[in-house]
Image 1: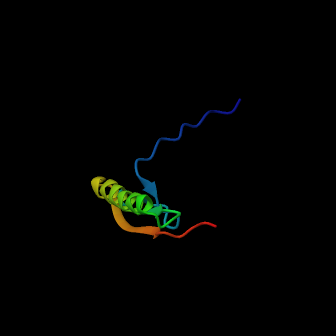
Image 2: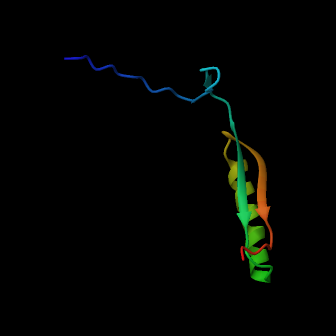
Image 3: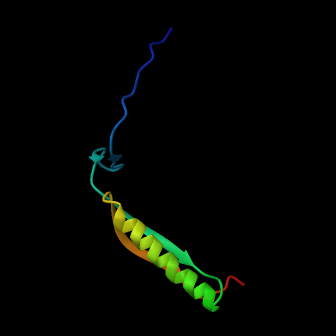
Length: 76
């Protein structure tokens, strides 16, 4: 019967090109969207931007890069 090999957990992320462990912060981005240009949707858009920026800046393991957005663009 074959022996079982236990693979130890690696703390951090792996650079797939180099095979090394990355322990530093990661770059993150957010996406906000509203589907109409009505006033309540504009408030929703601004609320989304505020929420995402606060969330990204509150995590010391993240580097906030950008918020991508579609403001007042309908999907129809």
